[in-house]
Image (cartoon, rainbow, N blue to C red; front, side, top):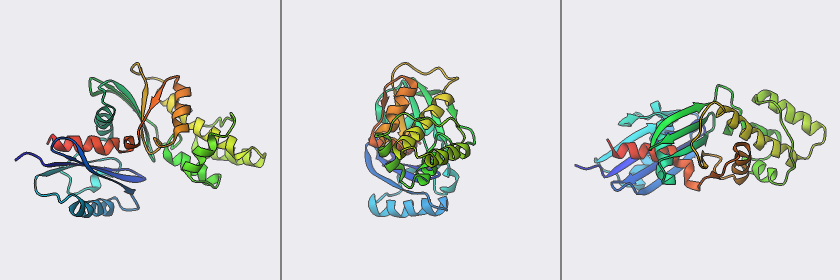
Length: 257
């Protein structure tokens, strides 16, 4: 019996993403929710909602990926984030040669894809600088949301945060606040710091020619794309559905089981 549905579940440190593809590879349902404190409970909640929304029968395969992929007991297989993000991004952006930057809640990945396969990749170290968590910490310091910080940054002037460490960078932000630096300028510096951290992370890699493709939770923020483009001196492309790249790739793997 052919597979009727492929379900990809990407349990990230901050959000859980789910994509359901039919047998033709077309999306029929997607879901985004906070991961919460228990990845297991989140996975079970996703499964219950799937039963109601998609009416999945027996001819379905599940693939889990992400930070909490081992917490999806009903998954037929687990696949690494690198593989799933690469496959999902290649399918979403309809190209087999691309450079992917995925900015997640706790980690950032730079992936080079050649002929549809991972050629090289780099992940950030244990420091959260250059991640969604870094943005969240700095937004809290400025008493705004991450989205509000990025919007505010568009109105700011060039300002620099020299430290790439989250703890020291937060101290710099507090000092800037104490000196009366406009919040818009500080927000500009925070977004630029993320871009510079990602550029440093990719420093030893030989990127493919052409644009960068941004996936992950920050793909909805145009100013992030702008600063990444300036840092790398390249065009940065993204799309709202790029946030689901990992789950999309997992769903494609599920269809192939």
